[in-house]
Image 1 (tube, helix red, strand yellow):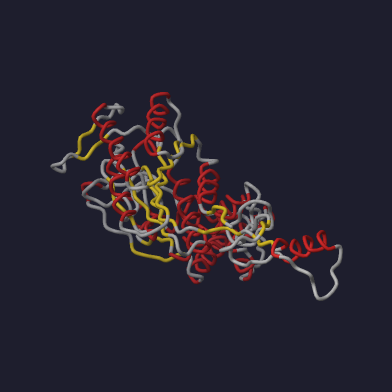
Image 2 (cartoon, rainbow, N blue to C red; image 1 turned 135 degrees about the vertical axis):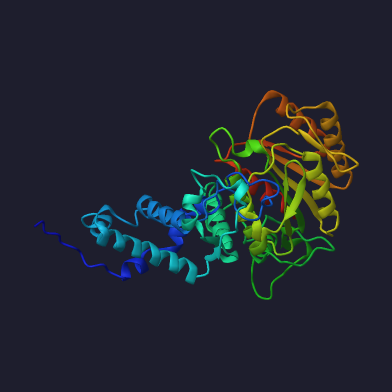
Length: 426
């Protein structure tokens, strides 16, 4: 008879895993986009569509992959857990993964929920989401507000670290930071200035003039130097996210990185600029605002790009807020190809660059400029016709255009936001 030796399972092994590092490794899985379902099945930011795996089995597989890739589960640990590959050793591995899932739930990062029923007419017979897999997908997980906040914080740290400001709120660099005011050089005091006295510079002037620092000090009006500081202006921001068909086609998911940037920007504004606001608008065949809490579950929806409707909704949201600055940050990869008609019908031209659609879109851009709203466009595509349209839009709105990719998108957006947040005053 063949002999088997089993290593004793250590219940503390799941507790030894760094949960925050694990959650960081799971960010792509937790924020995965995919395509949404059909119109009569769900909204574009409600329950996940067929391409988004929110099952507990999918979560366990993602955790195991993250542990291995992150180095937290070494080959030796994996071998010890698997043993000889029989049912007992597989149960040990399942116990470890279940323990980690329970820790994520107990710490408030995830929550479990029953999956919504899918109409039988829309349920595939085979493949992902088929009836054969229905039982395994009955219990699903959702990312909580705490989980979204954590992922926003981690994404922000990664993005700031990529251009030399990795410690959020405690920077000590020559750059503008997110938490520490960057003082400018001192200037001679003028009537009306706040008397924020630069003692060292003032004494230096007195010493140069008198050659002595004997007490009592001989200070003259011309010796006084005051520090300049940063003026923080309040800003209302609408983040427009393109959820048209192309944002997840051709083997590249462009929407998930956009969601990560949105979470990072939300965390930055809430923690470092509490006087600011941020709203999120999805635009596709039409446009709608979504709550920040629903952002993680947002998916790519209909096929077309109704940029004009997105701008119109964003302008309405911004004009309702009394802020020093109003701006639209638009992330897109396609040409305007849809337009909402006065009667509510959607006019569509899949080829894009329809003269009527472009004219109405630019009309809305001009309305934003008239309202004092800056539009900064972050373009994830580079075809010639699209570049020309973006150039024309920037001329009208006096905004900026960044032709970037999913790897550098977050850096460009955060740098642009932070630069606009400060201006020099005396």
